[in-house]
Length: 87
Image 1: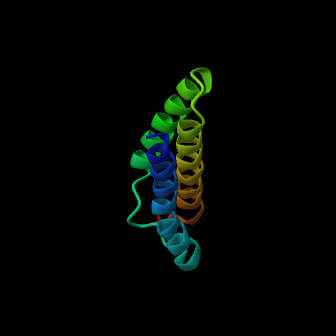
Image 2: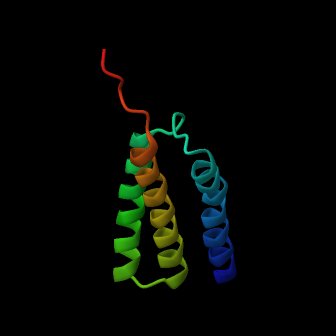
């Protein structure tokens, strides 16, 4: 059953890749919710801390890769968001 945790970790990591690639190609982030990604980073951080103390490598892999991808998306959002235009 441990194999399922590794498969899940890999699939969760892969699911972020298309979004990151699209953002890198288009430099458009208008449809991204920064609040959602901030909450995702908090959740991944909490899970990562828990599984670092209760060692389970597959879960550390899952939460660290999710946190990394969420952080990349969050940083790209603030790098490329459309600035409010002066009136």
